[in-house]
Amino acid sequence: MKKNIVLIGLMGSGKSMIARALHESLRIPSFSIDSMIEEQEGRKVREIFELRGETYFRNLEHAVVKELSVKTAVIIDCGGGIVLNPENIALLRKNGIIVHLQASPETIVARLKGDTSRPLMNVPNPLAAIRAISEVRLPLYNQADLTIDANDPSIEGPVAQILSRIK
Ligand code: S3P
Image (cartoon, rainbow, N blue to C red):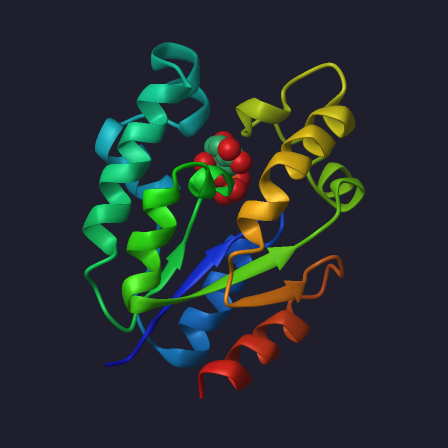
């Protein structure tokens, strides 16, 4: 069985860009959980949070994880909060290698400056918010099979590391 590549990490850690590069290099399908939710709901993630709340979004996220976790040989680009439900990681691990793209709160804030698409960052002090999120999630992200430093804006290093691990 060819394993899935499951990308996890904080928002802005480069998951989507790295997923695209892996898709081009490996020529295997790539799925973005956030995009699937947006397509299904006909709304952007930010609007889903505003109109229906976070719990509603997390339930949708879990349903998409169930659907994707049975696939093989695909790339799965997860939203940053995927680790909050332990069942998600257990499901994704069945057929997948879990890759954590690790970036510091400072990197994330600098990268997402001016980007209003992340509801959890649309707060007066985004650095404090991402530090708090990071503290809660780091032990959860550490369940990954592979952790890669994603602080450098270039994605070449992380992509090469992932490719060398799976080939
Ligand atoms: C979230 C991350 C976002 C998106 C939503 C919640 C989070 O995805 O799912 O805004 O809780 O960290 P990205 O990690 O792709 O930005």
